[in-house]
Each structure stands twice: as structure tokens, then as C-alpha cells.
Image 1 (tube, rainbow, N blue to C red):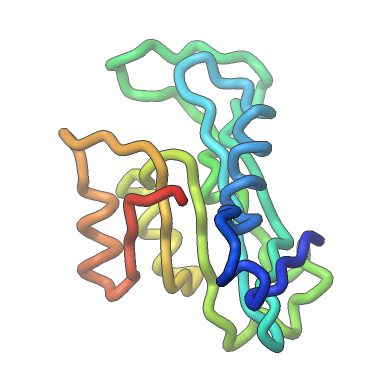
Image 2 (image 1 turned 180 degrees about the vertical axis):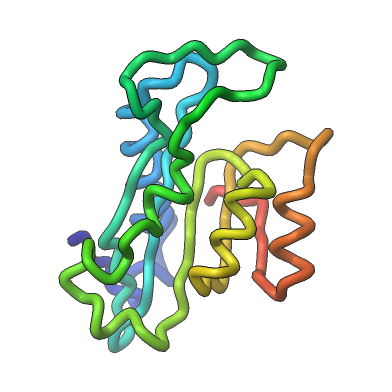
Length: 152
């Protein structure tokens, strides 16, 4: 678990720890096409906690992705980071009812956006965008999830 005190963050030029965790997670991706990392955060008593982070990965540890073509079966970082949320976090009792913040290095696709809404994600920050397909972003906004294309 990585914790950041919000008071020190407000007066700092450093980016929140979730951005850094997402970037670190993206380095573990085994996809040749796109390395995506995600971090899930929540607030507890004025402290921002980053407890879960994951990257996109191929289940069989072998990437056959081709740029411009639809991806084969791959676990997206957004799904990995929210999968079994209750079981993977030692703070699961404090997560319930808290504002869940997802930081991801690449904008969520439509399928991931649907799952993020089901999981109760409140805010999504993403770094890189695919402007020709914003169906995931549009779905999140339609379902009252705050979405930000900023990484600072």
C-alpha cells in the first residue's frame, strides 16, 4: 500500500502517487502493441491511498497484437485493477462508500467503461487518448463518471 498525505500533495508540484503506480504497472505489460497500466485510489481520513495497480496482459503470456487490428483476448489494466476489488485490498472495509479514483495510462475502451461503471468508479484520469474512438469515455460520462484527460 502506498499512501500520500493530501496536505503535502496540495502544496507540491509532484503528481499524485496513483499516476506513478499506473506508469510503473505499464512497464510490466506483456503486450507488444500498447503498454497500459492502471491504479485504483480512494480516500481515508484525508489520506489518498493507492492500494491496487495492474497492467494489461495476455493470459497466455504471448502477444499477437497487430497495430490497427482488434486485440486478441487480453486482460485490460482497468479490469485487472478492479477485479476482486474486495479480496485484493487489505482496506476493503474502508473502500465501501469511498470515492474510487482510477488512473490509467490509456483511455478505457467501451467494454472496460461498462465494467468501471458496474464497479462504482467515480473518477477516471487517463494520459493517452485514441480520439477516433471515444465510446468508452462517452459511456463513462453518460453514467456520471467524471473523466479527465490530464496527467499532472
